[in-house]
Image (cartoon, rainbow, N blue to C red; front, side, top):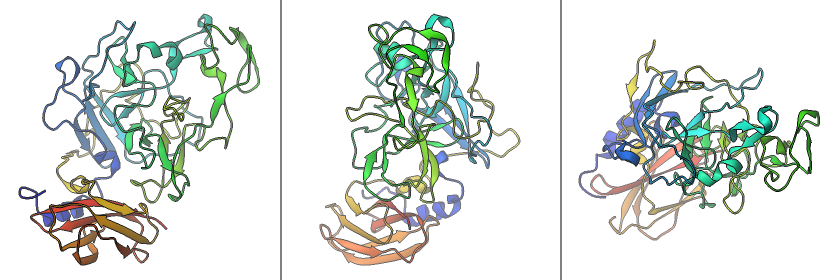
Length: 415
């Protein structure tokens, strides 16, 4: 990158101004900045992100930026939903009765597409006891991105949105790919093996598994079902119903909400985070996305008939987020090799970029835009290291090069 890039001093200034406000629930969205259109010539991805002290407002059409369709046996057509979802900036653990992830949208992917839970709208003999698993019942109508439109035209996925991120990258912590309506982030399929942010990258395993049953007369808690379901097999294989699954605490990496409290690259001090769950062949694993209940409390406005049309700024000052300012400017370049990331002390790095001069400088900034360490006369294709053990935990940014030609990256310090 050469001329035309905003001077890093300006970026650092923007960082300093926005360090307290441009947190991941503001910056993680796929914003359509050039009026790109998707299915049906509808504007795609997220059109606008606005934020205040307590909430983030995400305006979206529910149409992704990638190609979608066809949908075998599904007569519905995606339509512009004109959603304005409201995401709390202060998510709280629910200490009361768990809130079920109901039918309809339960969260929103980072590209503005709706998240649905595992349920189909029907049950065996309409008794409400054996609830159909949408992945089994509706799966034939999923497109290659694993989505399909609802009768109202709301395009959505019930499981891992494989076209939104690289779900085969098992060497890197997955990015935030959405937020549930309780305000907690949703990551892709891979995270740190240890909740403190250490260890290898591993696929997050669900703690639900198919029950060892041949008849459907008892429920997962062992009680007798008020209405028996069909025997297992044939048209009704194991997994066809939600009640075919049993949660066993500690059998996987995630809890009964399909998440865990852990350190992530975006939250170096830790946060409760959901993960989408897939098996070793990249097929979805129940409960697939957040659910069957939320970990946190859920505010009004996003769930139920006609929901998802909130009014930004009721009783609070709202700012429109612009992706060309703040921390987001510092996330680029695959030409820097940084390891380990996160680090708890020594940070190693190498540069692979022929656009940089033979000898250049490397500067590390904290999240306030303050210089914490600097290295001069750095050359490409040579390994260097910083001792970060004396610094505070958090997200740090590396600038390599001068004002006219430079590249940037970031890393996380944990202890």
